[in-house]
Structures are given as C-alpha cells and as structure tokens.
Length: 294
Image 1 (cartoon, rainbow, N blue to C red):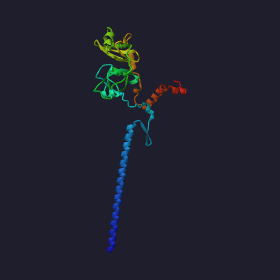
Image 2: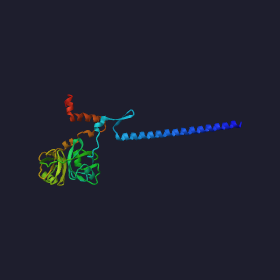
Image 3: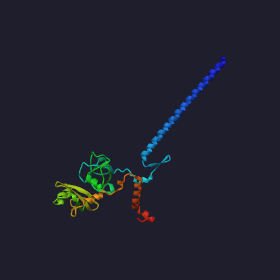
C-alpha cells in the first residue's frame, strides 16, 4: 500500500516537472517570437523612413516602390549656385551680397561681375560684395534687381560668374514716362552722369534701374548695349538717352507674362507641358528624322 502511494507521488512530481518545463519552453518561445516581430517591425519602419526621405517622387506597386518618372523633368538637382532671395541692406542697384563662405564656394571674389538668372528666363548682371550677416544659402538684392529678375523675397535664383564681361562702347537708355512728369532740365546731367560717373556699373539689356537726384527718383530702361547683351559702363562709354519715353503700361504687361513658375500644383500636367514644349526645341534633329515638322 505504501509503495503504491509513493509511486503515485512520484508520478505526480514527474507530471508537475514536465508541466513546468513545458510552461517555461512555451514562455521562452513566445518571448523569442515577440522579440523577432518587434525587431522586424522596427526594421520595416526604418526602411520606410529611409525610402520616403530619399525618394519623395515614388509610387507603390504592390509591396514594391518604383520611381514616378512622369514628373522627373521637374526635379532639380541641388546646386550650390541656387540661392534664396533676401532683402538687401545696400540699396545700390548694381550690388548683390553673399556670405564669405558662399563666395569662396562659388570661387568668386569681392567686386566680381556675376550673371543672375531668375524667373521666365530673365537675366541681369551685378557686382558681388560679401556680407558677414548674410546666411550661406541666401543672396541679398534690392527691389530694382528683384523686379528685373521677376522674383520676390523667398524665391530662388541662380548666380553665375561672368569673367568675360566687356567695357561698353555705347548704351541707349530711355526714361519711364510717369517718372519724369513735370521734370525740366537735362536728364543726362542731373541723373545719368552722376549715377554712372566712375562707378563701372554693369548693365543688361532690358533692365530697369532707379536713379535719385534733384529731389526726384527717375526710372530708366536699358534699350540697347554694345556689346550685347550686357557690358560695363566705363568712363569712355557713350550714353545715349534720346528718344520717346517708355510707356509704363507696356512694361506692366511684360511683368504679367506667364511662366512655368506661375502654375501651382498639377505636377504631372506641368511635366507634360514642359516636355512637349522643350523637347522639340532641344532636339529638333530627332523630330526631323521621324518626319515631324517643327
């Protein structure tokens, strides 16, 4: 009788031991599964963030990500010469200011002449100065220069070295009609001569510049330059200012020209328009080869 009781106890102890082992193994297995799932989930999140940060122009096909090439023509590579427009501390029409670091990065020197390119294929020329308070990613210019580039504060322009700019043989400028109403006297002696005298100012065909003198401010437009399209007005440059003043309304109409930058949203449609317009202009031989007249 005692032997059977002992056998029962031993059997119960064995069963309890097996249960404990099973519970421990099950618990350990569940922990391993949880750790693996957590690790996999974190890896997936990291991969998604990496893909989304490096490819903002992607679309999902099933579980794979492929680049959306329909708007690839609109993508712009990072270029160090593309800068954000900021307000100038110097009101000189011929001056733009950069940080010392940006000037060195672009391999420019203080006093260099540069070409600025804004919206709607607008260009102008200015002299570079350094400004210790200017952020590296910005370029400071006054309102006159911004208007010539058709840009506003916060817009992006590109800046390019212009080492081959020549001294002008002659330039032709005309005043804007509403800025000379009631004025008498010689415009050249009162406004243009003091403005250009020994200043070596660069000018670009089509630019409008503001000149203050005689308690007035007069706007002039550069109608022609020789050589074209830009030059430096040196002491021996001939300045012509004869002719009918330019109508303000005609200039305002040119300010209202529509360009790609004026189309908001609709990226795919904008990409299609840009491709249809620019492809024949850049590769006319391709269209002639397939018999398409441009």
